[in-house]
Image (cartoon, rainbow, N blue to C red):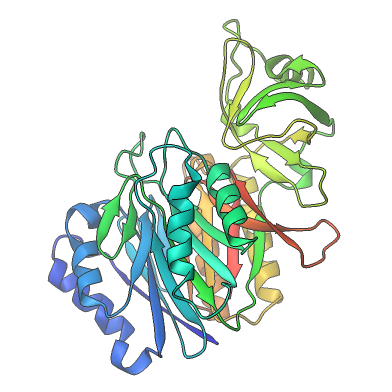
Length: 390
């Protein structure tokens, strides 16, 4: 059994006070069990000010995590906030891993870190919690697929780090007080644990009825659908093509991709269109997949988050929830950027369940089979709200 503790601070200028606030809320002497690990999410200023380092030095257990542009925990949400979630147990064992710098898609870097962390456990892990770097040359599908192969399919839940800057230049993965732009930190959990996973993306009412088949693609570049360049396919659905070949607001029209392998569909956001009319997406799209086009706005984000969180709470009870939502959903909130967090806080306050929520640059979460059975397949997601219920 895992006990979940949470603590937060908005004190970014006084490291001693920040650490004192966290320790007072945690009360480690009274609350920690035999095995413990911590997960931190924070505004990037907590890294540069030294708070993350001071906190890690003060805690008697490993701490990993990531920067974010918005986060929340029980009783706290703020534009500048650090949240710490602690998992502690007598019968679940935690092992923390950190890769060497990820300079290319060389799987040995991930494999070596995983094997070292796995070797510290008495049994095969039941869950992997991930904090991945935001890199230009390596994406979420590479992370998910490599660790899936290495681990033999251990459920992998987590985030790709972001920050509050438009180019995310302060996005960092955190590991025991150190901050990295190019390393992947993770926690392996072994023992009696049966996590459940929930997701919200786009409701059926916001999805175009027409479906297409991917006829050409290369990794995350979607080239043709039904034999047409993507830009022509989108125009056939009624989206307006500009004189320069672009489509206005392309990020608001993500693809819903069915791999046709019996698993639930995933969402892929479009970042740009190439001169050839191809779409550069936030994840791989395989040839032969069936896709639809959806639309996302502020109302859709809040409604789908509320629906999924209510379903999660009704399926409990749980000892803690870990949650991430895509920055694409955050940006869709427009003039009320805190509305998703506010909805989550209201629902979670009524539940009394400890939780940690943060925005992400990519969501790593297993999907269930479409027939509702327990079989899980690890996936990388875009524009998605994900939950790991412990």
